[in-house]
Length: 152
Ligand SMILES: [Zn+2]
Ligand SMILES: [Zn+2]
Ligand SMILES: [Zn+2]
Image 1: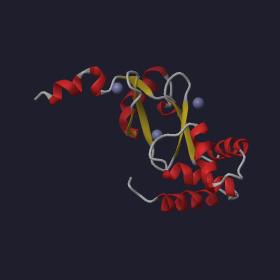
Image 2 (image 1 turned 90 degrees about the vertical axis):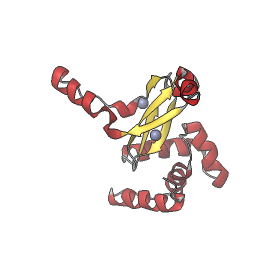
Image 3 (image 1 turned 45 degrees about the vertical axis):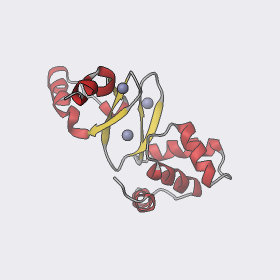
Image 4 (image 1 turned 45 degrees about the horizontal axis):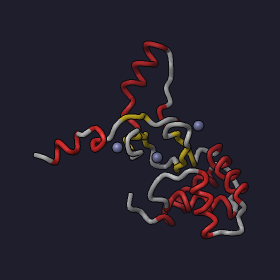
């Protein structure tokens, strides 16, 4: 996880080429910003970040690029609640839990909802896609669990 952004950027660019897509300056800049980001970014956050290193790239180009990368399967978005979408690269698959109290985002392994997915597929012929929306709830601190734990 503590991997240099550039190395990750190059790997994503390789995937992009494998999928027969063209590498543009905007695409590289957006991939790089996502690879370097320590936290999840909204499209607006991403726009600001990309323009810091590449001020010549227009904000509408950044949004279009994000869209194109999503269609290529290199980028995905998730809604953290109330429609706020954040973007991340798809090379490290994960699901999201978000705290309704403080907004903390917890990343959990892709396999977390596997059992639920199986149950719903078998019982309701419904295929869930938990990666599209975060599961809302309370983090340890907001639920008071953290406080109790630290009293031990
Ligand atoms: Zn994520
Ligand atoms: Zn919380
Ligand atoms: Zn969506």
